Image 1 (tube, helix red, strand yellow):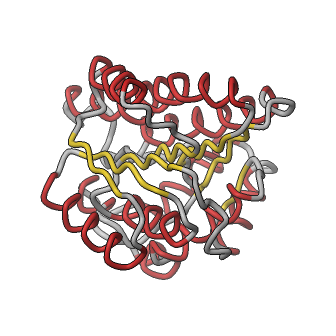
Image 2 (tube, rainbow, N blue to C red):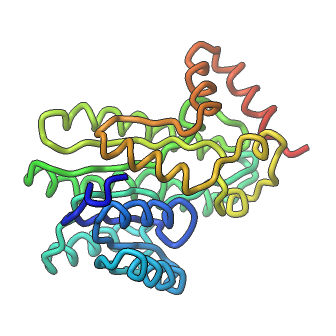
Length: 264
């Protein structure tokens, strides 16, 4: 990647304390961007901050914040604006999934997931997008999933949330076509992060066979974003599966998702 592709730009990465968030930050720093890293776990943010400063020498700021709360999201935007920090790239990475039958998962956890995966993503996009449109330049990245393309028993609410992200991102990309701002939805499959541990699922054979490393997914996503494309499904197996879902009846698509994701 061109080490100056984002020279002089500032990128804000949410969920930057682990997994894809860390690797998105590394890719953006390597492309010359200054960084604002946002997550709840301060110690992990500090480690990444030190790593990126040593490796690339750019400006790296960290902000500890729970983005599930609207007031925190508004404060994040307002504080950066008051400090004169312009956000040129927004990586809307914060989120998590929950595995289990919908009626058995505690509602409090499902509500928290939906607040982060849908509401916070939409709100942060709205807050920073207006500034980008006024300047006539910017990049938005939203994190979808291969679950965006099919109903997924066991991940019913999560996959539905990611379907929202995919639809929202494509519509937004079209709306922004004459503004100089673009929106890219990155749809990974199973990735070597904390996702399964947090969701509460044991790895299935299918997941082990198709798992991609986080750094590769992040690299593909950032390149697609810089090319101002609306979508990327990372990995050829994932891309084929996502493509063929459009031809299957939904009941069959749901059965296939259940079959390959079940923890019998």
